[in-house]
Amino acid sequence: MSAARILVVDDESQILRALRTSLQAAGYEVDVAATAAEALTSAAAHPPDGVILDLMLPDGSGTDVCREFRRWTNVPILVLSAVGDEQEKVAALDAGADDYVTKPFGIDELLARLRAALRRVDVITGPVVELGDLVVDLERRLVTLRGEPVSLTPTEFELLRLFVRNEGKLLTHPTILREVWGPRYGAESHYLHVYVSQLRRKIEPDPARPRFLLTEPGAGYRLVRPS
Image 1 (cartoon, rainbow, N blue to C red):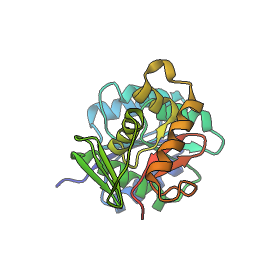
Image 2 (image 1 turned 90 degrees about the vertical axis):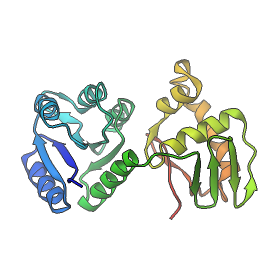
Image 3 (image 1 turned 120 degrees about the horizontal axis):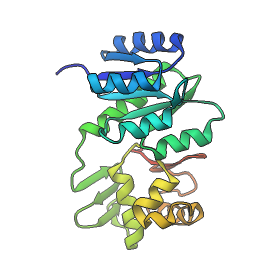
């Protein structure tokens, strides 16, 4: 199997060099770009298997680049954001980014998030998904926790199904609302909080300390397999 090709987009030459070295050492093929235009040109010439994308570029925003990528590819996109760029980070996630890492970042964390994003592309979710004690039968719309049936409303199940199909991926509030309730609910974040709380009460052994459905402050929610 050939190595995955990763496109790194950042206007800081020091970060580009460091990421190229670390990614190559981890077994990836690496292309680099310092501007939005270079990123789009490089991706067209050598389609990547994954993208690491800085949000602040000299000729445009990473959010716009992410949106352009999503016109023709579903490869994982991991965005790099500076501390305090919460709105830009959420905008990028809504534009189609899969995850984010905040600068300054540890290379081990970045590589782990990249591996997780690449795995999601390779995994085809079957009709039955087992997440530790939680088992979700997507086809029969059945949920069990520690072998006991869990009664969910139709909306709660649709919410859980969205999370299961995007296991490990950070989903923003507007994205979840649009997917489950439709476009006109895109800004009703308080509406979502109510349903997430209800879902946690039913699927979490301890809703006050969730193991499955985690909150990403200021961004959204992520479904994970408990460690």
